[in-house]
Image (cartoon, rainbow, N blue to C red; front, side, top):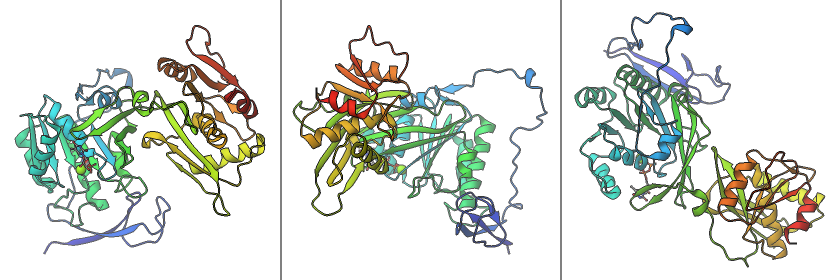
Length: 452
Ligand code: TYD
Ligand code: MG
């Protein structure tokens, strides 16, 4: 009989203990240990972990740098986020909520390539994938599909097909024979990922892993997964909206401050090269409660629309709610308005929304938030030719924000007439511009100039 071994793993960090413990010694989390059965059917479960044999230490000055060989994956936005193409032998993890479009994105890439791609799915049958491909409407005779969950069988097929790129959808559904625990468990995910890493490095074949995400937005499985892979991409967006954002959270071969915006259409994902144009509704000049912010995310600047509704509270406690914006920050801005600008808002309900279902963390949109709130409260529209970029401090000062030139240029390019920025943003070339740059230092001042 095969000897079975039971081990306990922390579901947060992957730390192993021989006995169950309440608190993880490695990461300090409570109640994260789960029991997993590990049997040693083949060998002793000890895997050849040596990636490159006969390697000797080399002097750093003797190492010559070639440029990494990269594959152009045809989707311009993804290429850019990866740092200029997919590096051969790299392991890329793509995470995202269910139904966000991870499989669609990767399949679309696989169908556009001239390289041989092996798409392994542990979730769907090949027919289902074919149906999706029909929807996307591209055919490609270099794209192989395989519906399989056993890692050993998958590795055998790699030898048969000899793909240039491998896709595994998803890492939580595949399992190796040498470990008895269920697919998706810490030990399975860890083992499968390191075996795929070994394959990628030895054969110089890039591997895409699709990963599920937990309720709190982390990639399911241990954090070690994120440590093992070279690149972590995150696909996010609002389910009720068509816009999706692809970011890189970790990238060993490029910058992490990159971001791409896509739109989910009935025939697949479309890259959005000019986000401001789609995110701004061409609104009527007469509507109150709207203001445009010049934001920067992932190295790109784009304009977004902030919408606010201020009304008299129907109940004793006024409601404050925000979509796409931090509610705590909204509360802070309201307190600043009340205290520094003498604006009575404590008995009002305030609702805030960022149009397009986009989430924004950029503090530079504060000024637009304030403008939208004031506009809704006074029921006077902000001119649709105005744009805002400034952070509000606790004393009501308008603080400078990063990359202001880039923001001004974007607003100028889209035909805005005025941009409100902080007085403390230094060294800005305001001349030779087709846009009027209004500098303000305090929130009181802003109130006066906004509707002037
Ligand atoms: P999918 O790629 O299966 O998501 P994930 O792999 O992240 O779970 O995408 C699922 C959603 O995308 C599904 O609800 C249908 C929608 N969709 C489109 O709108 N257009 C398309 O062309 C395709 C293929 C899917
Ligand atoms: Mg999927």
